[in-house]
Image (tube, rainbow, N blue to C red; front, side):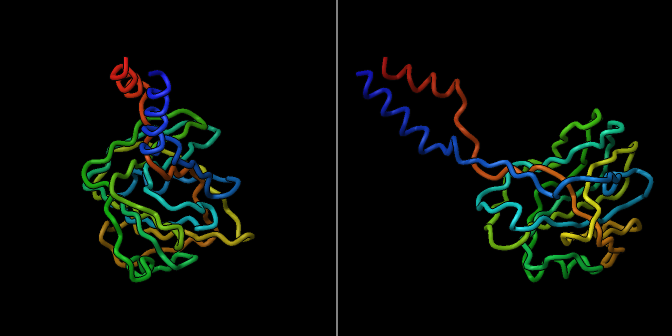
Amino acid sequence: MKKYVFLTLALVLAASGAVATGVHIVGGTPNSANTYPFYGGFSAFRWQTMWFQTELREAGPVIKIEWQMRSASGGQGGTYRNCDILLCITSLWAVTSTFANNYAGNTPVNVFKGTYVLPASSANQWVTIVEPKNFTYNNTGNLLIEVSWQGATAGTNFFKYRSTSTPPSPGRVWNTKSKTATTGTVSARYHQYGRITIGYVGVEATSLGRVKSLFR
């Protein structure tokens, strides 16, 4: 009977995708930090950047995006109202000043909508920016992220990024006047440092215990 139990558990693990997740460090080696887009000094914000396919190299659902706080200090957190976070696959390798053009003809997916609460954090802490439930990366294009909000009560939050033109950076574009702005200011020497998890959630240990109990 034990052989059947082990075989069943192996099949459950295989079917669950328990090992089908990958954590990818993106953005290169950070050498600077910036508060955008979670900075409460403005009444509104629209912001975009992207990560390269060569940094990800894996297809599957994006289930977590994290950024790291700067070494000098933690973040004060904040509340950002009327917030939207979008993900989109794009064929571009650098952002332009026109937000819609950066989708490269594709339709972005809204992975967060509502009041966004960024928790306070400590120096060098990894902070979860979003945990999408509805976006799948195809491993062919680059991955664009957009954050917009209207109205905030927030402190200062510095996230690490890499400032360099060699190798090329995808850049960022932002507008501090309106979350629906059509154009913004481009900073070319910008590559957001972060961790992106792609894959499926594994089986919990408690679930395996329940499966085993069926065969006792």
